Image (cartoon, rainbow, N blue to C red):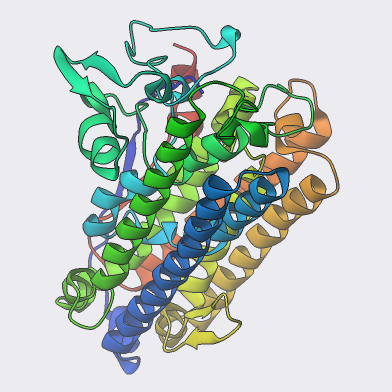
Length: 425
């Protein structure tokens, strides 16, 4: 995937305190924050549990490569995305999450840095001299003027030496998307249906090896899976009682509520509606899919939206089917303005319906790649349904900010929404 960088605008909302906000004191803000933190802890723990299952599947694939083992590992990756995508609403309002998130979910990536790619992919560019470095094929290379010994592919090599090498964000060597690429390979179908089609023999340890360097490819995949688990262990701990993320959140009640709304608004508007959906449609570019190698973008969008909704409602269904719930932001808003709470819930439901249509269509065979194709009116209608729903719910989030009398909630924007002409400059 060739990285494209666009400037991001910020919409600043500075709302003065109003008398109506006093009514909201009927709902204990501390309880709202504790529910939010409890759900975060559950989501990250579920992300860890499913990442551990992914790691186990990778270990089987590496030890005994087969078509079946590769399919099991792919299924484990897809399952791991379900709880993780629901955590993204925690990013923008919580610095500890945003500073860490690039280790596990950075996107887009220049996959030629990791492994072999199709000849049409190209080579080094002015933007990224390492776009086709191919670490799997090269045990030694020069990086930023220094010799690198990559004879042993370890988690430390991936995270400390290679990830975002030379300060280039597209040099992604860790996290879900690096693993996704190693399991599926490039999606070379353009706007046609179909995901990546890496053969299981790319991990074979004998004469059946395809793609070359099967032992190093297996080592890379193993190291990336190990690193994902350790990174999620760390973040899960931050949301437990006494953890840094929880402690920071509850230290100041108004700042904590602001963090919740910042995360909801920024993911809804600039990130998902703009950078992940509207931008790809404007460019008609299948490379702008979030989960482009696996053709799982419809689920990424759906579970991002669900994460926003379950934070507002204060309830999350865990991977074991149990429910985590408590006093919610919805309760806090309803105590101030019941009509506004009903509006917010209605907008969230409408967005989930629109994102559900994309998910249903993709699962029925109308791939997200196809939806992005120029002139595909049905695809455009589906994607824009999601975009419009996300924008609409952001406007209600802004009204919630005003009703609660909060200050300086910064909702991230996107050129694709705020200055479309800049996208093509």
